[in-house]
Length: 213
Image (cartoon, rainbow, N blue to C red; front, side, top):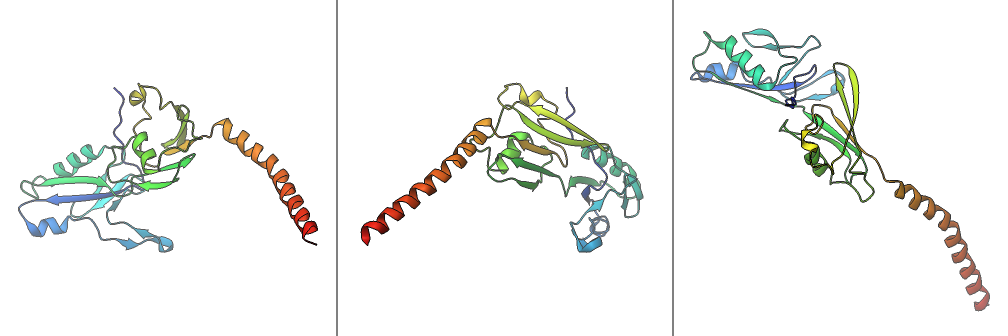
């Protein structure tokens, strides 16, 4: 079975909530407020994973979460809180899980999603689906893992596409929809016709001017 669970990466921003029987403790462990980062860039509230894979968490200090799933990160934090809080419940979620869809789609863009369990079809839906020229049978996925760029082709017309390790998306994935050759042919044909159309209009205009004199 393919591992479709996204793993926490450097520069991920995590929202971490801790709920217990103590309201004061809940407030202490709440996600950090939003702020303006370097260069005036707005940063969403949460805990950013630093270049070494750690977050700096209240009371507990540095916790290494890089490489873990959200469930694993939740268990790590809950274990560290044993003896500090009673009956604590920890929830961990992404604040900056984003994917990019470009090429032959109606609304190409980068999308920030709240649910990390997003697949290709859902991402294409957010982008307004493919244009009539999009190649559904040869979708290009670009993914970076541990600093290495991986490119893979996915056939969305294949009934077994859901078993592809690339069907479910991960942070910063890029989907590129290539155009069919027919688009370039039609575009080229239109370009060849344009001078003839302009010439015909000009000829009609000259004829009309002559008749009116």
